[in-house]
Amino acid sequence: MAGAQGAGKSTFALFLANWLAHETGLRSIRVSLDDFYFGKAMRATLAQTVHPLLATRGVPGTHDVEAGRRALKALTDTDDPGPVTLPAFDKGSDERLPGTVGPVVDAPVDVVVFEGWCVGARPQPSELLAEPLNVLEAEGDPTGRWRGYVNERLAGDYAALFETLDALVYLRVPSFEKVREWRRRQEHELRERRPGAGQTDAELAIFIMHYERLTRHMLDSVPGYADTVIDIDAGHRFAALAHPGWGGLQSDGG
Image 1 (tube, rainbow, N blue to C red):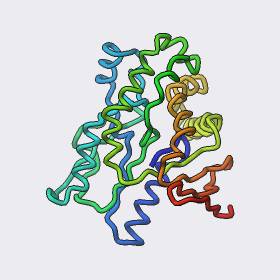
Image 2 (cartoon, one colour):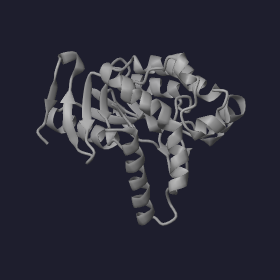
Image 3 (cartoon, helix red, strand yellow):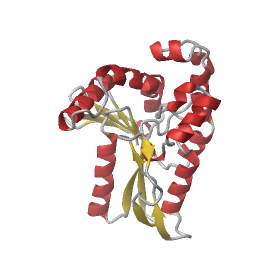
């Protein structure tokens, strides 16, 4: 399950896993790509050896993809049952939690709902990488090395991981501008609950620029190959459901 920041994919993925478990009896679990982010030390190494912008978590290249592949295999391997300890990432500290802290799942399970903002993304055509998309790319990646590396990773180990998935559900937001609006709202609500927490509007604007290129690319491309597309309207509600391979758009009537 994929969708831009603020689309509601984590909440919906958890709901879907719980619904499947309660209504169908299938052993279901939500797993987030976010929990496979590299910690600060590994990202610092990437920043030194590949590109400074890789110090910030988010884009392909900042996840432990091999750990993700192993986890999905272990969760669904009927030939090797037993407990599986999943990783956990704390966004507050921007750091991975110790290996023994994550949830322990009695495997195998019937359904894994694997969600993440870039799940299922495909690389861009190389010619589209030439021009910077925003201030971050223009000033922080003038040679295109960072965006090229992200694209290479999408074509490599990320593609191999995504190929193991059985179906792709995409939550399509109205526009990238709505991503900015919804993420600002989230940060404002966080600061109201926990004074001093969260990002300022200026910090958030820079942070979102790291995601902008691939988010826009996915809005343009993923609906063409996803198994199911769920449209999210400007009021943050499910508006329509499409199964591209099944030929048709269905509205839920609001």
